[in-house]
Length: 365
Ligand code: PEP
Ligand code: MN
Image (cartoon, rainbow, N blue to C red; front, side, top):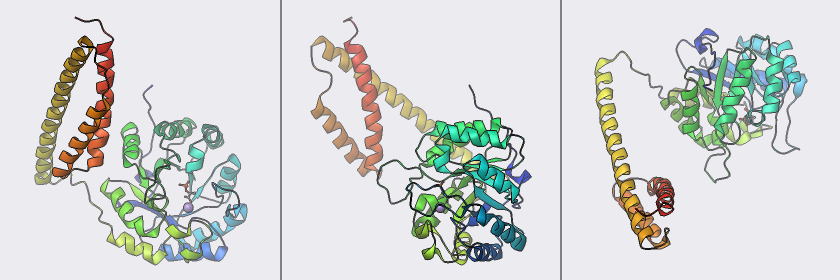
């Protein structure tokens, strides 16, 4: 089944004057004062299009602050009235949706811990049937693209057309300087499945730490994301959730000022020509790469026939060690990451073992 999604363009439901959509606000609505003052200071930045706040906080461990719930919704009404800005809130159950809409929340988002669960996503989809509200869907906690795709299919299946993706990074169990590893290629893959889907970067939940926000926000801009969602709090160190990754509204404004927003210069013919030339060179290089791979595989096949006919074992650990060592050393000489070349060789080796097994088990010619 080829997935297809009816998506309204971002510009049809939120005005950003052609600029990236900027959503900012505290991780959680804590008190009326904290929420309204953060919203007021963010609105002063003149670059923020939507305020965000968590009202129901799905926490990985119990005992952390789990949100103020319905009590925070009147504060949102006040913050909206004072700033004139629309508001986005995370919802995880039909009850959250009902309450959020009752209090005039403008945009809903589905959190990473909800996207992982198709039961929850379907319940949310059922509750959204017949409602015209924008819904943003965060990537699931684990790097499973199908879950993210499935969530869009379920929500779109309920008739929601104002859709967007939030890329907040993944928990993989591997250690990283980031709280959640971005794995940009997964967001790019989602975009290639649903090209019309707006992609919003969430550097806050990727970073986990203020220090990394800028580089991640810049990366999202370089990848031509449609917007950013960033956590901002009037007193970040005292935040009740995600304290280490939040910025004051002023620091947030400064970060935005320093971001390079590169436009796709579709009108500049000279630029397009240069780009086209480089792409052709890349195409040629890639063709050579594929040819070389095929040539290598043909040699492997010959080798396997030879091993079979002489009763030699297929896998020889010393040879594999030597291949890895010499190839990564060569990589270093050419300024390539040895880890990259190592990963590529692991895949090539897997295929080469598969091929050799096939040959070894076939009859001698
Ligand atoms: C949040 O946006 O505050 C949040 C809980 O994010 P995530 O679902 O990405 O963990
Ligand atoms: Mn948060």
